[in-house]
Structures are given as C-alpha cells and as structure tokens.
Image 1 (cartoon, one colour):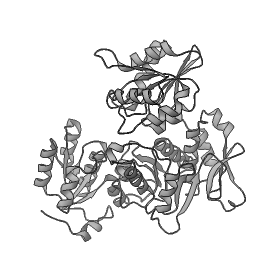
Image 2 (cartoon, one colour):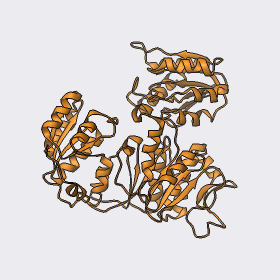
Image 3 (cartoon, helix red, strand yellow):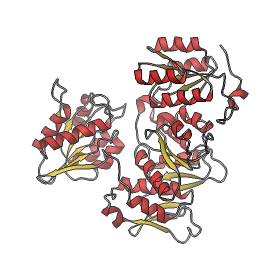
Image 4 (cartoon, helix red, strand yellow):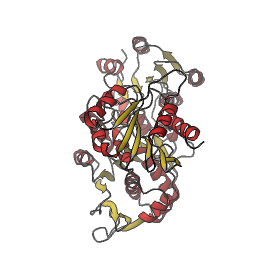
Length: 490
C-alpha cells in the first residue's frame, strides 16, 4: 500500500500545486465523477474511475483524456481499487456513508475527498471566485438561481453550480473565470465537505429527508450544518426554523462572520423580512438599527406570480446572500421582477370547469408538499413514490381537512395507504396499480378528473422521489402535464 504523506496532501491546495504522480481513484461516472476525472487528468494525476455500471459515451471520453475505467459489482470494484493502490479517493455524492470503499480507505489510510473540496482546492486556475453556498431541505435550486440572477443584474460574472446540475469543477476550469459562484449543496455533498470557506452561506429550512441515506434525522441535520463551517462574512438562517439557528450557533466560522436571519415577519436588526407590504433589508446597511432598505413590494411580487410564502422566503434568502457582497438593492429588485421559476414547482398547467391542475412534481419530500398543499382549500392529491425512509403520516394528518381524495402512485403504496387509514380515515384513497401498457400518470389524471369538482385543485405533489416509476421528478411532471393536456384540456 503506497501512502501519501499528510504534508504532500495538504500542499495540494492550488491548481498550480504539483498534482503529477498522484494516483487517484474516482468513484462514480455520472456528471460529477466525470468532471473529477477530467480535472485530475488535466492536472497530470493518474486516474482510475470505478463505477457500478457502464456508460459508453463517457468511457470513450475517459480514453481520450487518458483515464482508466473499471465497471463491476461492489466486490469487483473493491478489487480494482486494491489493485490500483490509490493515494487519494474522490467519491461521487450518491455513495452512501459506510459503503465498503470508505471503510477500505479508512483501514488503509487513503484520503477521501468529495468533488466540492477538490473544486475548492483548485479554484484559482483562472480566478478564485467568492463562493455563496446554499442548502436546505427545499428551495435550494430556486434560491441559487435567484442569487445568480441578482448578481448578473449587478454586472458580476456569476455561475449557479453544484447540485443544481453544473459541476463546480466545470465552472472552476472555465477559461472566462467568474467573480462569484453560487453553489447549491445537497446533504450528500455536505456530508463530505471539510475544506471550503464560503463568503456567505444559507440553510433555508430543515425537515426529514434522505433518512435512509444519512441513517438518522440527527445525522442529516449534522451533515447539512457543514454549510456554515468556516464561513467568512454571513451565516444566513431561517427565523421560523430553530434547527437552522442552532446550526449557526454551533458553527465554527471565521472571525467576523455575522448571523443574519430571514423570515416572513417583521425583521429584527440583522434580519430580512416583510414590513407593511415590503420586503425589507435590516441586514447590512449602516442605519439598520433605525431603518430598513426596501427591496420589492408584495404587490409587485403578486403581479409576477411570486407571492407564495415559500417563494418569498427564497427571495429573502437570496437577497441576504448577495447583499453580503454589497450588491445594490436596485439591481436585486430588477432581478426579482425579471425572474421566472423553474418548471415543475407549483406550475399551473390548466384550468377547466373551474378545476385547477397544478404540477408540483418537484415536491419530492413531505416538507415541499406541505407548502403546496397549504395553498388550496379543496384538493384531489396525487401522492406517492419513493419515500426515502420518511413517514408522511404527519403531513396527511395536517392537511386531511383540505383533501377531497387522494390518488396514490409509486412503489411504496402500502406505506401511504396505511398512513391515510390511520391519520385520515375519512379521506377516499385510490391506489393506482402499475400495469403493462397503461401509463401510471395517465390513469391517475383520469381518476382525478372523475373525482374533482368545481373549485377544486388537482395537485401533483408526491412528497416522494420519482425514480421508482419515472426517470426523474421532471419526467414525472412532464407526464402529468401531457396527461392533463390529453384528458382535460384536449
């Protein structure tokens, strides 16, 4: 076993450090894994990618950049690692804690990084941008996009990266360079983060999610809390979520970093919130003890379709992030009023016979579904999928009085129907069985049309992941939209 000295590894903290001769095993050949392999090959390291399945297109690219590739089951992957004898292992976010590769690395004194820490170390290739980091159970992507939109309106060179879909390493290596990277971080990524020093960070909210991956809700919170570690200027938290406040209180930050809150109430000093119909900043300006800066009015948000409570929270959080860089409120307002949210998040698909059809396929957990359920008074709810170890009984109990009926899709139907039987026995529940040649979503929409009455909302807010019956939450949403257009609006 060829170990690498701690001093040599610690010295690899710049693009211009000597990465040659370093043997690195990269686990996973998704978007992230390929970006890691491509980066390390460019740096002159010896790279072997090890994955559980083949990807012919990326495998051909690995040949071009001079990286090895091995695919097999866990046992075969481990044998390939042992044979390669790496100095360092970079693991893609999807590999669960306690996997045999992590255990092997610990036993053999092999350093393990995630792609985020690698990106931080080599961020100076073109220009070492400031990082603004975003996490939370829900709202990450919207907040990341909003913050990037605000910075762009202020004339900054900016890229939204990370869990949003663009690997941070791709942005770091962009020859144009950036002033700021807005980095969306999942709990999977944060579980491996050890080195980054963000300018400002936010945790939007915390609710039970990915418990099967993290092992417990407490560990999920602990991993999310890594977003605040070593933050330099501002740790931004949600006043309505005590978990996010405790994260900030317990974080080991750089000297001078401030705690800044956001919420839908009147903001305290060092807070962002709502005052007399205005979104207001009492966070950073000199007169914050006696006054607030106006950002945008609720009337303006309503005209843009941005008045949902969770959307306002995301706007406030993004504003708090970019104001840490002294961005002009006028540019922020311009960006907000020009912003269009992503598809599949509270998307109104059709109104027919006074029934609203809403696609919230991006509600992949109970916390996200709660927000969309709260916006309607009478609902035919399409729910179900992969629950990721989360019990949705509390969600059902809280919103039972809003439900005309529930249509249950997905692989874990028994857990959902049992939760309804226990928490909302008066709600009619209709499981949709997967049958050859009959698309699940088409059947669900057809059933919803039978059940819905004037004034109702048919809401796809599954409170579950999609990969049991669909390629992604976007695919699930597109199938819902297509079914509504065929059956209802056609």
